[in-house]
Image 1 (cartoon, rainbow, N blue to C red):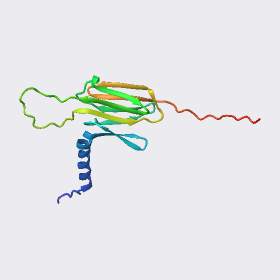
Image 2 (image 1 turned 60 degrees about the vertical axis):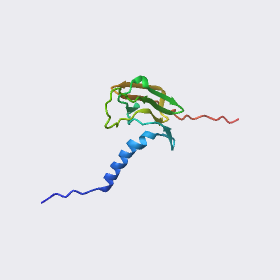
Image 3 (image 1 turned 135 degrees about the horizontal axis):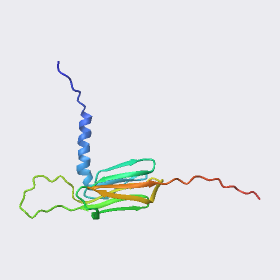
Image 4 (image 1 turned 30 degrees about the horizontal axis):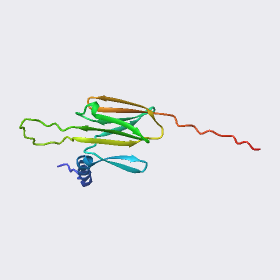
Length: 152
C-alpha cells in the first residue's frame, strides 16, 4: 500500500510569490508604514528585519551581512525610524568569470512608523557580525487627568 500525499497548489504559489517579492520587489522599494499608507523609497535592496516586543521595549533586528557599521545610518524623524546604508559591489581585478551573483548590492533602506509609546530619545543600537539590533524603549503613556472647572 502506498501513502498518498495531498498536493496544495496554493502553497506552491505562495512560495513563488515570496521568492518574487524578495528578489524583484525588494530591489526597487523598501516598504514602510506611516499610519495607514505605505512609504516607498527608491533603493537597490531591502534587508530582512525581525520586530519583537517585550514588556519594556520593541527590538528591531536587521540582517546586514558584509556591511561595515560605518556604512549604516539609523535616524528618527517625525515618528519614523529609518535604517539605511550601502553595500558596495566587490569588483575583483582578476579575470575570474562570475557564474552567479545573488547577493544584493547598492543603497538599502527600511523605514518603520514608531508606536506612540516609544521613547525616541532612548534608542540603543548594537551591531555585531552583520546583525544590527535596535532596542526602542517604551515610555508610559501620559495618564488622563481630571481638571476641575470652577463655577463663578
